[in-house]
Amino acid sequence: MLEREKESTGEKMLQQVMAFAEEYIFTLSTLIMVIVSPLYMLMIVYSIQNRFLISVGTSVVCYVLFVVDIYTNILSDVVESWSPIPSISDYLFIFFIAIPIGVFQGNVELKMESMEEDEDGTLKILVQEEAEFCEYVEEAIGEKKKDEVCIIIDGKNCSNVRNLFREFAYKFEFPDDFNENWDEFGECMNDLYWIEEERCTVYIHNSDQLLQDYVEDFNVFMSHLGDACMTWDNEREVDGFCMVMHCIPAKEEELMAKLEVAKCEGKYVYEQELIEIIYDVHTLEGTNYIEILPGEGEIEYWSESSIFFKEEHFGYIMPAFEKYYERFDYCGINEIRIHTWNEILAELEEIKEYLMSHPNPHSLGHVVGFIYEGVEAAFMQNYAENRNQLIVMITDSQAWIEEQSKTTKVITVLGM
Image 1 (tube, one colour):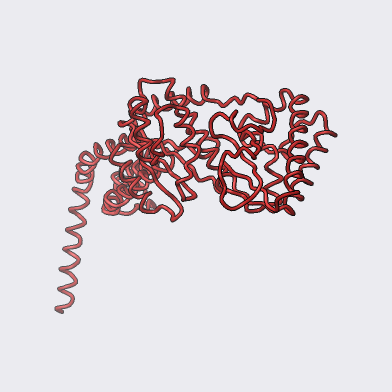
Image 2: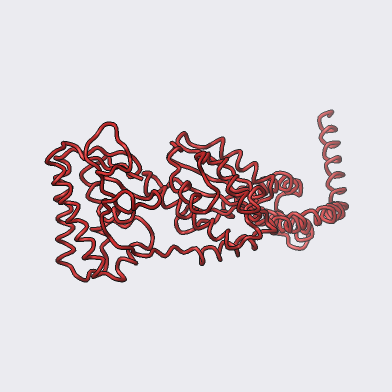
C-alpha cells in the first residue's frame, strides 16, 4: 500500500514538472535565444574577420540547431509522429564546449592557412596579431630540430638601410670586416659558412615596417634573400633556408603589394660573360671564384700557381666532379688524387664531345651544370658562341690538369 502511494506521488510530481515545462519551455527557450543570439552573431562575425573557418561553421550549425530546438515543442504538438531532437540542455552543452573547440581549431587553421608559400617553398607570409605571432615563434623555436637554427629579425629595427645592415649583421653574426653596403650584404648572406646547422629559419617580425619608405632598397633586399635561399639549397644537401614574414591583418594588403612588386622587379636576369679560365690572380674582383691548385696539406688561397673559374662557369663542369668525387664540397677544400682526376677528365671529355656533336640542343641541363636561375637561358640565347667558349675552357682545363699531374699526386679544388 505504501509503495503504491509512493508511485502515485512520484507520478504526480513528474506530471507537474512536465506541465510546467509544457507551459514555460517556449518562453524559456525564447529568453535564452534572445540572450545568446547576439553572442552567436559576434562569434560568427569575429570568426569571419579572422578567417576561423572551422569556428564559423561550428557557430552556424549550433545556432541553427538551437533555433530548431525552440520550435520542437510546437512541431511535436502539430505532428504526432514527430520525434523531438535532443533537449535544449544538449545544445547548451554544445554552445559551451563545441564553440571554444571551434575557436581553437580556427586559430590553428589560421596559422596554417594564412601561411602562403612561394614556388620554391622558401618564403612564408604569416598574418597574425603580434601576440599570436610571438607565441607562434616561441612554439616553433621550442620544437625546432637539432640541425636547425632560428633567427628573429624585427622589422621595426630595419626602418632604413643602415639599420637593416646592423640588425642582420648582429643577428646573423656577420664577420667583423663587414662593410655596410648591398654588395657585401649579398656576399655575407650567400656565404653563411659559420652557420653549421643544415637548416636556417628566419622570422621577420613586423615585416611591413622593414624599409617601409624605401621601395627600391626593399626590392634589392628581397633579391638578396632570394639569392641566399638558392645558394643555401645548392651548397647544403637539403632545402633548408626558410623565411617567415609576419604582419598584422591590417597591413596584409600593403605587404603583399610590396612583395608582388619586389618579385617582378627582382627577377634575376643573368648576363652571360666570357667563359674562360683565369690564370692571373691579380685580375680577380671579389671572392666568387673556384680555385684549383696543385698540392695538398697547408693550403694558401689565391696562389699564383692556381687557376680560377668564375662561380657559374665552374658550375658548367661541376657535375663531373660530383659524379666521381662523392665528398665534393662546393664551399670547402677538396683534395683530389690523380686517379680520380683521370676519371673526371674522361667525363669532361664526354661533355666536350657532346657539345661538339649537338650544335642546337633545346636544353643542356642533363649534361652541363647551371647553378643559378637564368644561367641556362642566358647560355642558350647565344648558344653557338657560348658552346665554343665552353669547349675551349674544358680543353684548357684538361691540359692544365694533365700537366700538373706530372709533378704532383694531388690537385686541390678550393670552393667558395
